[in-house]
Image (tube, rainbow, N blue to C red; front, side, top):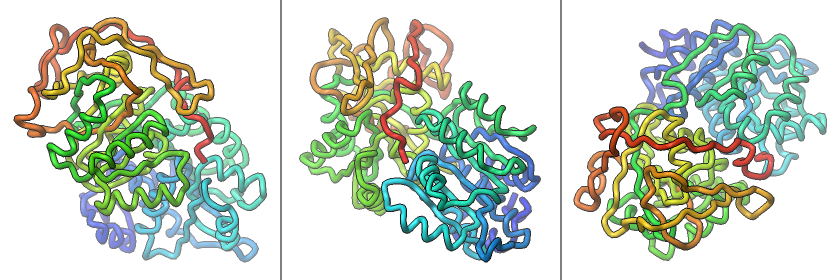
Length: 475
């Protein structure tokens, strides 16, 4: 099927073609007609499936198909797109501009971390489509510098992340002032009870689209676990990057401090790296992301919140230096690779402290992840788990004690400083002659994708999302 067959105008199809796309992805094939029909939509789509175009293309089509009427000499905001992070907001607004380049429509992107006055001036000029983070939008609402009375379409992108970041109150404040009659589109990679509750209160008899199994991971991503002692994570990461000659790897850490520390360690190893997290200025975050996309950096070290919106074509490797505190974040992290049908690999460096986190992740994605022990980095089987600090910089984040019963990664331990979580590729052919083959576990149901049988592990309590959130509003 072609894009023109979806009911899109020649101007939009031409812009899409110029970006190198000729065939719609499954989410686009289903979402575009649903949005054009004018009804509400609840879409379950993992990151990297082309969901951004799935709502921007029909949005552009709808707005350009009706006459643009100015109010008091200004173009009213007719569409509002809310995203959880600055980077994602910038990415979405860029898509709006690229796909709408041949249309008489304007757009703006507003988020925190930068001056508000340039945003105020842009809003005064009038825009058709506004992309915003909830916190900064509320700032403008409180200063009466944004008019949302003419919104016809509301889109919540990565709604699960917005709820996990604690934006539900902000979202409700925004919803309260929007026109009651409007089209609502909700996109989420995972479906929690909170998302279902939000959808029930927001959407009116919505069409439902789910392009992948609920709460699943993209099948084209090769996933692998490398057990390791906690004080050997940095040497192992450097070993993997150098041995496999990785030139572009996105690494996830649990804390901002951990991200900064890992950058220093990798730089001493001759590996170019920069960090991107909430304490970095917007200019620093933009620079780091640009250099990473351009291939000037081998490694981009990121926390979960800052990584939202990182969209890099053909990104081959994602590494979990630390496992995420919330299982849903694992799906989002590894979704940075394997985007739009491309292959990718995600490697997790797991120490003994993270046993229960791994258990929770596998239970959430409903699959066992293959284990591969790297020669020279065999974990100490006698290592004891230690508590993991869930927030950086203190602030009453609390701790979660890992360990307990057996399970994969149960042999990983050691002593030393807290480690970070990067994601790495674990695809076929990686590290041949360097690592032992993935080891199957005993007992349990057969593993998908030809992996060995799974080991049955006992239940592990999953902490609440509130316990895991990073501080701040993420504006």
